[in-house]
Image (cartoon, rainbow, N blue to C red; front, side):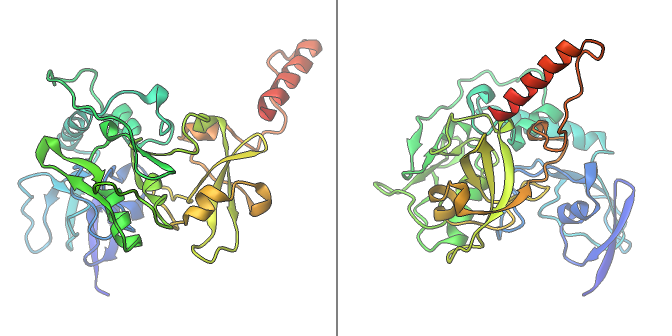
Length: 333
C-alpha cells in the first residue's frame, strides 16, 4: 500500500494513504492525539459529530502547500503526503476546543458526584483539560426522565451528547436495532420505538461505548465508585463472543463485568450479555492478572504492586504497626 508522510505537532510519521489525521496521531501517541467523543475505530461511519478532535492543517500537501482555511475534524480528514498539522501547538485549536466543550456542557448536567461514569468519563477529562469556569448559556437546560430501555440498561437522556455510538453498535452488531435518534435540532433524543425494549445478545455493549453516563448498567448502578474497585483481566470459553473481559472486584465480589478497553478508551472485543450480566462469580472465569491502568487515571490509585505500605511515622514503632493494620483493613474492604 502507498505510504505518505504527515507531520503532526512537529513529529513526522509515515502512514498508509487514506489514514485519518486522528489515527495517524494515535500512531504517534501521547498529547499529540486529539480527543474524540464520537469517533470509534471499530464502528463504521462513526465520527464527525462532536467536533472535539478539531485540528489546524497549516500545510495541505507537497503538491498544494496552502493551509486549510478552517479547522478540520481530524477523524474525518485523510492525510496527504507532506501535510503538516497542528493540534496542541495551535492556540486557535485550543480555544476552539474550549468552545466545543462549553457547548457539550450546555445541557449536560454537572452531576459527577452521583454519576456511575465518574472516574472513567471522557467528557469529565475534557472539561478538566479544556473547560471554562463559567458558561455563557442563560436559557433553561433541557431535561428528561430516566427510562429503562431493557431489563439491564437505563438511559438518562439528560446526560447524552448525541455521539451516535450506541446507535452504530446496535446497527452493526445486531440485526434488530430498536432505538435511534428521534426529533430534530435541540429536540433530538435517543429513544426506542413505541413499546420496544433493547433485547439482544450484544445490547450491553451500548454501555461500554457511551462516553458519558447516559447509558448505565442497572446491575451496577450506585453500587460503588470505580476507583474503589480493582479491575482484573479474565477469559472464559464462550460460544457467543470472545469471552475476554475485565472483572471489577470489590473485595472478593465481582460487582461489574465490562469489555476490555484500549488506551484510547475503545472496546478491544465486544462481549455478549451472558458474559456481562450473568457470570459474576470468580469460578466462572480464568483469571489472567491485574488490568493495566494508565497512571493518569483515578482508577490507578488502587495499585497492586505495593505490598508493604510506607510508614507514616518512621520513628514510632507503635504508630507504624497501627498504620500497617489500617492499610490491611482498607485493602480488604
